[in-house]
Image 1: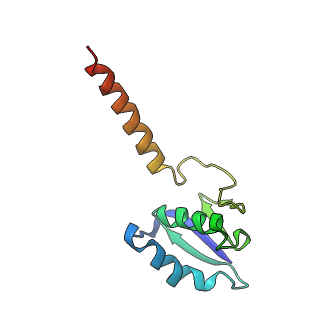
Image 2: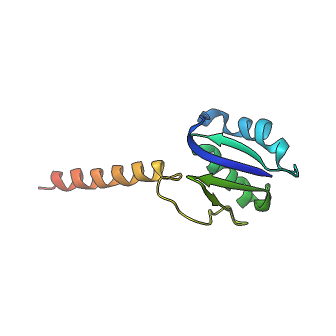
Image 3: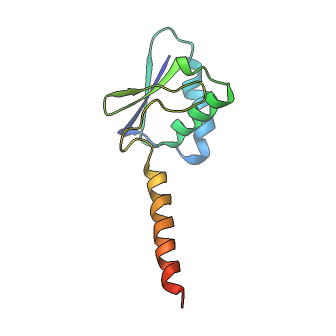
Length: 111
């Protein structure tokens, strides 16, 4: 069983190494009877896990996330059971801010 912890003290995973990191480091422990924790500071590995669960390639009962002491289960479709401010939301916040600023600047260009 795998516990993926999202923490600033964790290991950063390059976008180019997500698959390799999961399949070489984490996947071998999925069927272990005990809980094996892995700590990461980047959210890309968490998104990859959600994708694997959604595809049916990873059993959602054998892996969960932890953030600020909260256990976050994943359903069979790869969706997190709860939203906690600060958990995997940096990319979403940056996209929202980009769209807001783009809209604001576009409105300024209108005659």
